[in-house]
Every structure is written in structure tokens, then in C-alpha cells.
Image 1 (cartoon, rainbow, N blue to C red):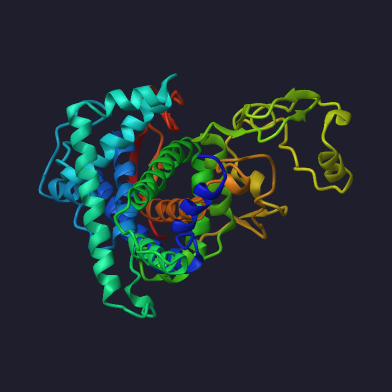
Image 2 (cartoon, one colour; image 1 turned 180 degrees about the vertical axis):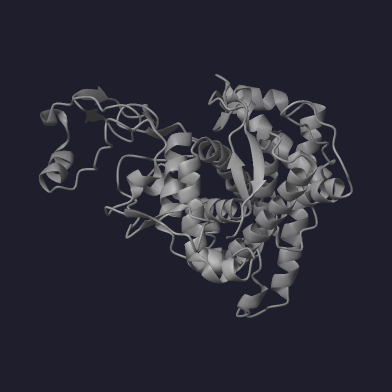
Length: 462
């Protein structure tokens, strides 16, 4: 969709969902509860198969999906993916294993969740097709996908109807306590827009239904993929993992003393530069979104090359200047605004050429941090002190940029932050067997690891 009145109208529907108030009061509690369920699931798996490797991508995906469904439709939304798996494994006393890997039985997911997963996977097929519209027309007629679309629409309509009924009970629109989910926000926004435009509110319009589902898809698929890369990087870089765990321990002393997980509000409000740096490095190295595309809205010139209006321009997020030295460019070929920023010392900094392809969160820390041993917190893990996070340390664009940059960027950070804190607080991520530790990947809507396995060991608090 072009950046015009229609796109702005669609964005207006969702504009309240990334505010600090919504994220802290609605999204964060739902995400925290879902990540606690994921922690319970991995606790059961670690009990049944101690220090054995098992496939983790589906667990991470389901945890992220549970989270986005909970804050999209409210904590009372009954369909959960992770909880069923926890309940099934909790009833098992032992699990047969062969060698250093195990395969866990999987609980049957609710039909509604199966439908949403099926549609999300179909988007991957469309994205990789040279004729995406034709591909969608074909696969949407297949019985299993047509049924999935039907069930998905039923769920979304039901939740919109519930939200509209709740809204009707608040005739003056002043009771903010009724806003407990994304659909509550969306329905409330539609009512306000309708009143402003002098029309009847359309709570079940195709536009609203599409925006709700788009929010669900965007809120879990990219984030779960980034987290899948994240557990691989941390398992393969134990020193980094130890530094991060030490930083977490020192940031939540009450939780350490009380031998518990940090609470949801503690997670949201803590300032942990090394955690921020680790998240940014996971996003940079994982390359979940390997390219950003934009369309030229007028004839222009880029580095001396004529670009006609309407041309689609692909900007790679994993090439030169990101993971290898940048090209040598004649500064005279750059635009006047670029040359002006260079003279004003505003040009984006470059990564150190010696280690730019290495997973190294420290590159995002602005000050020269000193490393010390902290015996009281983190079991002697290395802790970085006197460091501050620098989001502009070097080139990276995991969320694109500009007006069409990723709308859910703040939400993704909350999800990744909560997952990493709860998982690393509870477990050590051990290196997996070489045959499932590679960094091969496949591309669809996102850039996913071909293998994402974890081996778990309980992480002591002291």
C-alpha cells in the first residue's frame, strides 16, 4: 500500500498501541505471563531430559504467539499454545532418549491457533513467489487454508463484538479501565474516528479485521525468529551469556535475595545497558529482516546513478558496512544533505573492520567499561560496569526507518527483553551438538535459522 491517505487511515487505527501507557499496562503483563509459561515448559523439558538438546523454535514461536494473542484480545482469551504443552509434559515421569538429542511429544493446539499458524506459514509461500497475487489466489482456495481463513475470521469477529459490547457500556467513553487489550483500543479508536467523521462506526469492517490479524502476525513471527537466533548466539558465546546473566543479577538484587524471578514491573523499568546491547546485537547478527524495500516517488539520483520514479529499491541489512567493510565511495557522488551531515560530524559511525562479523554486544556500549569479578551476584560471572548503551553505535536497520519503519518496534523490544530475562535467569544455555548448531537459514517472510536447538542447565542464583 502506498504512503497516502489510505495508509494513514490504516495506521491511525493502531496509533494508540505503541504508546508507553499501552505497552506498560496492557502489553507487558501479557508478555510476562506468556514468557513465564515458556519458562515452565522448558523447566519440564529440562527435568525430563537434563542437558539434552531439543528443538526450540516452535516453543519460542508459541510463546510469542501466546503473548500477542493475550494483549491483542485480553488476558481472558482462552486459546493458549504453551500451557497445553506444559500440562502434558508435567504428567510425564520420564522420556526415552537416544544419544544427545531428544524429541518431545507435542500437544494438539487449539483449532484457532492452528489456523493462525497455517495462514502465517502461507504468507511465507507468497513472499517467495515471483507471482505473489496469483500464488495467494491459488493457495487460498485449498480446503485446509480456506478453512483456516474462515476460523481466523470467526475468532477476530468474536473478539471485536465482545470489545464493542464492552464499549457500549461506557457511553461517555471516559472509563479507561475498560481498555484491556488491543481490540479494545482499536474499537475505541473506530468509535472516536466515526464520531469525528459523522458516520456510523463499523466495528466489523474488513479493514479492522485485517488490521487486527496483521498486528497478530507482525507481533510474533519476526520477534520469535529473532529470539531463535538469540538463543543460538548466546549458547555459542558462553562468556557473553555469563556477562549478561551477571548484569541481570546485579540489576535485580531483591529478586536474587528472595530467590525468585524479577517481577513484570521490575523487568519493564530496569535500565540494563548490557541487555540492550545484547538485544541490538542479536537483531544485527540474526538479520531476521534481511532487506528493506522502498519505492522512489520521483526521479532521483543515488551515488551518480539515475533512478526513475516508481523503481523499487532494495536496501540490504546484511552486506557491506554491516558485516564486511563498506565500499569506497566518492564523496562527490553523495547528495548535498549527505555531504552536509559529514561536514557536521553527523555521519553514522562504522563498525571495527576486524570484528564486524562477530557476535559482540560490547560494540553497542558507549563508554570504556571496566570488567570486574562480582562474587556476590552472578556466581562470579564477569560484570560490565560504567557502560551506557549507544543505539547509534554503528549501522544496523532491523526495523527499517522513516515513516514506514516497523510500527511494532517498541513491542518487539519488550518481548525480547522479557524473554531473555526470564530464560537466562532460570537457565544456562549450553552449546548444542555441531550437527544442529550451524547457522544455515531459509528465507520467507523472515530469515529463519534452519536449526534452533537448546540444551539447558539450571542457572544458580548465587
